[in-house]
Length: 148
Image 1 (cartoon, rainbow, N blue to C red):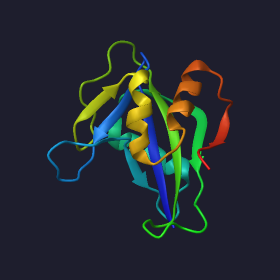
Image 2: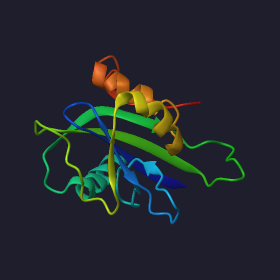
Image 3: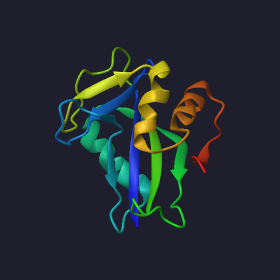
Image 4: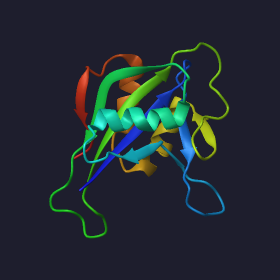
């Protein structure tokens, strides 16, 4: 089973950081920064590693909400079995979001009204609602199950 972590990085003004995928195509597809959890690594430790690759030494605040998409049984034939966790982080420095993060590709900052369209591409149902609830304060701390 693949253990995947996604990093949802929010600017101080509530914009979401998306990065260009590294697949060759004419136009980039904007996705969450992500990575695989290593065998001896927890999901949270893997997210911290992906975060370091994303922002380096830029100060961030880690949220206490974790969105989880549990592995499906049975596995759809066109996919490998995976479990995915989303961790929310927020830049702590005031001001505009940095134009480029340390990630290997281009960075795009998306406004909340753009999230529903952009978040559907990461195959994490309800992640836009998770982020909205986090920003507005109505999502409780802890693990939240995403989708069916």
